[in-house]
Length: 305
Length: 146
Image (cartoon, rainbow over all chains, first blue to last red; front, side, top):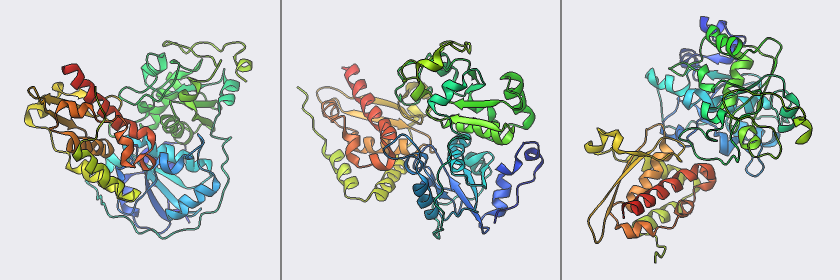
């Protein structure tokens, strides 16, 4: 049982309008059976300072990442997590979070690895809900445990690994990091912790489109026309393209993945979650420094494999 | 010459954390976050006097006042937005544990003190680095002022 989509005009312009809900839609539907609201933030304590009434918390790092291997949790772990959060396979899940839904989009992408069908983002995220003076609470919701089936992750359609990206060279790549990370002037976001990439620069031929360009000042997604101007006209993406997006650890590029896949309707979009913290440390993979995308090196794909 | 020692107040805070279960430790960190005082006016109106600790995940600004010899008591001032409760919590722990101590005692605080709060698993090592960075910055600034 899923809830009816938000039918407002802005969303109707997107390829898959059912992937977004507005703050008004959420306010109108809070407490409805079949809906679970999930908050997913960068700051692990932000949910505890106040959240949408009834919302549960899923932390990208402690809940969705495997504790030992650099990978996501497996089917059993996901089933355990979602059952505990009161989510069934047919639940409508609305995810929202801080920083223009950056981490919320990451959580949505992980839900998609497990094929959870009805998962949506709150347009504008946490900040918009708060800015509009809508209710927040520190009460912990009473969650009735659900039964979520064990579904094995299906990575291939939306997740790219290092080898996939080497094979992909020559097809569209979008680097969503800040300008200085792209040129190689620095290896982390300004004002963020050093996560240890040995080399700076970008994957050859990648176009630079920092992720936040897809968000308006109020944290909502830009309109269809604005997004088309950025990704089609400026970055040159065309219908039918096979696209890979990457950033530093795969979170910011989840936001761009959402835009390309659900808002602009590109069928084949993968997120390279190894991203720069893998590429910038890997042996003999090609790197380009500076502001130009660069060329595909002739023998690169063979060298690193 | 510097022997490592944890000042009494900070040791007490560490014990408080250690006595709790993991979820309650997060709650205690949240309490520290809520109690972080606003900046005094002389800094609140002059953001340029504060220094950003860039290693923290969320923006944190820090400044210090170091008193007269021989004790040279250290006073700490932190500022971080309400949207960054973890960062504010770390700042609150350091403020309550270290504020007013002689410079020598702050310098003697072991660098791994953040790890002793028992939060690393619940918060992740990546996020704990923010607190280590704050402590490192405080010590560096004291050394620079010598």
